[in-house]
Length: 175
Length: 397
Image (cartoon, rainbow over all chains, first blue to last red; front, side, top):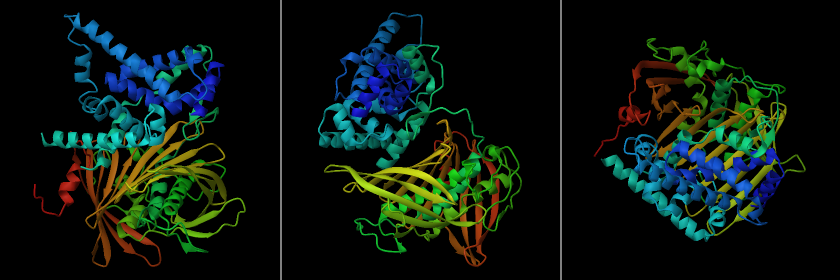
């Protein structure tokens, strides 16, 4: 955690190397957070870019000991939710266009990716915990610190999340 | 379905949707300005920026094949739950599960590093880069070599290409299927700064033997009521060259799960990362090879599953894991052993059989029979037909 904070400080001083390092350490968590809301790779990438940009423009809000990954994922979630609602508003008023957010989801990631389906099947917190552990490779204690939860809660939600996905996949296979 | 399958599917999906470098590069430009356009390439293993004008011309296919071949020698180690931390004295077979995985990871990554480290004494020759992907002429390699006996109907893969590709993994696979894995031995460390020394014999694809020595210290990094994490640092000696190694291992005793990451790096900056996940009767190793600029130059996975007395080894090759080889349990036949398998690439699958004849000592001769190419359409699992073909149990569903 401290390392990430130091990297963030270096970035604010214009250190590009530090940005590359911090990006490597955090981009999965940020992307998966955005993707869980938007279920679209391109939109999630856009939000990810906006997240880093917004984060480092607002660096002064970061304090020693801050959870940098948690801070970034919080920004990503808010931006993703904003983007989702913005697109829904735009799409709902455009009757001439068939493709809207829902239509994109139909034809792009939602039907093809378990990661996207997991965002539908699991509650938001369980989704994030499962993705951070399985895909992003964080340890449960790291996730607990990131989300401000007890380790036991993270472990329980992780196990339950995997069980739920397993049951979901088994049900889908039987169709 | 197992939880492991869910995790596997999630990770496979990640490969499909993972963001590219566009976001990183555009964000960097936005933060630091467009004229700061130098390329900072990261070694993903170390997360430190590397600047190098040198670009490696990579014999990835051969390196990978060799690595897997040698790697498999240690892949099959009976897992001993609750093994003691006392790992014995001089030249003693290692009884602790984790040390065998370290030894295995070190050896396999070392072979790959030999391919890329131009300054090292390399005992491994190279196949044409494009061999795995349908171009170039195939050559036979392996202890005793392999001979193909197919009908030439190769589809996207000639008989020779198929044989060469399969042959490159045969030692690995055979050790796993026969259950006669090579030993990782522990001896008193002859380096003052390292506590543990592991040795293992290995062979490259041309059958030349050497000894890999891994020196390391392992410390408990973090622990809670559910999980313990250890960190490793050390060096690996292979064929007269020394490589820096680092690693980490996390264990969840109650879940029976273990994860390990092992990274070996040459002086020229080429890095091999080995990731291991163990759960119950399954082991999966994932390899990623990075050049000196931090670019991924190859990746593949090896998975061994032991179920109901039957062993299967599955290799998936390439970043998209689109080329696969699956090996099924061997059986004794006519003075030798027979193995069956399937190789799949670009929607074309070919079955094969391998007769293994012992030439005395540790040398063996492999004789291959390659089946016709069959088109595989719209299969979620590239080995779907394989299971139907070789499942000799009654299907009660």
